[in-house]
Image (cartoon, rainbow, N blue to C red):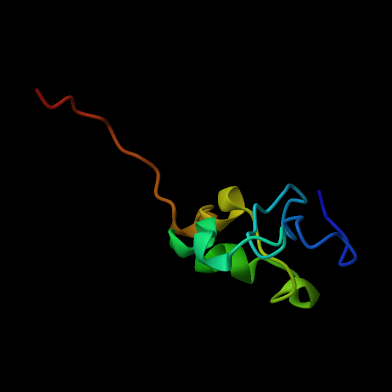
Length: 80
């Protein structure tokens, strides 16, 4: 989904789902989820230029790694 720049402030600019932003909902910003996690730089750079700094991304998009940084897992060995 490609949300438009006119989407509401509580919509993630990457996927359009609720961004769960405390500030957008009028709550205390100190309680926002984004202060408790590391936001993926890749997630932010994938946003269109006009969307950057306008609205918060959602927790799912914030944790989405850059596919180029992902490695193909090798054989798994059970550790007993």
